[in-house]
Each structure stands twice: as structure tokens, then as C-alpha cells.
Image (cartoon, rainbow, N blue to C red; front, top):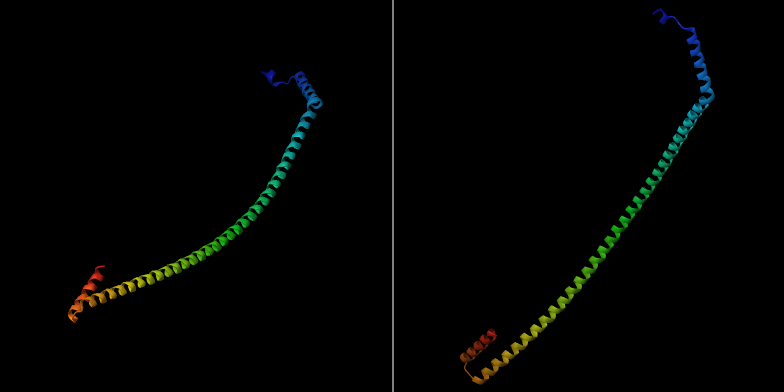
Length: 164
């Protein structure tokens, strides 16, 4: 067991030589490539970060522009809506005025027609009264009667008129 605690200088020298040879080979063949790859990766990350910042700035600018356009469109829509309401009110007033005018015209026509019908009815009644009076007079003359018989004739004529 003592051999385990005692260092073997030959193995130690070989291990140191192997380590130094490994460091030399790594420096000669791999170190520059590893460092170059790391630098390239670092540069790629920096470029990606810059592109992301540029894209964010462009997106914010675009968002601002779109917000402004949206506000402008909203204003235009509100103006057009107000114009449409105003136009609707104007058309409503025109329609109401036309309807009122037409109703007044129809009312006047109806009044004129009623007046004509009334005059015609009065003329018919006057003609009927005149015929009745002539009829009554002819009956009275035909009979040459006393006052009582004349009264009876007039009553009979009135009953005939009522029957018609």
C-alpha cells in the first residue's frame, strides 16, 4: 500500500509532457477556430439584437401611423354620419311639407266636391218641392173643394212625398 502513496516521477513527467503537448496542439489547430467561432457567434448575436431593435422601432412607427390614420378615419366617419343625419332631417322636412301640401289639396278637393254635391242635392230638393207644389196645386184645382178637403189632399200629397 505504500506504493500507492509514493509518487512515480516518470508518470508525472509524462503526464506533464502530454498536457503541454495537448495545450500546444489545441493552440496550434483548435484555439483560433474556437475563438473565431465564439467571436462570430458574438457578432451574430449583436447583429440580431440590433435588427430586433430596428424592427421594434419600425413597428412602433407603423403603429403610430396606423393610430393616426384610424383617428383620421374615425373623424371622417363622424363627419359623414353627421352629414347623413342632416340630410335625413332635410329629407324628412321635405317629405312632411309635401305630405301636408297634398293633404291640404285633397281637403280642398273634398270640400269642393262636398259643396257641389250639396248644391246638387239642394237643386234636386227644390225641383222636387216645385213638382210637389205643382202636383198639389193641380189636385186642389181639380177638386174645387172646401177647406177640409183641401187639407186632406195636402196631407195625402205629403204622405206620398214621405213615401218616396
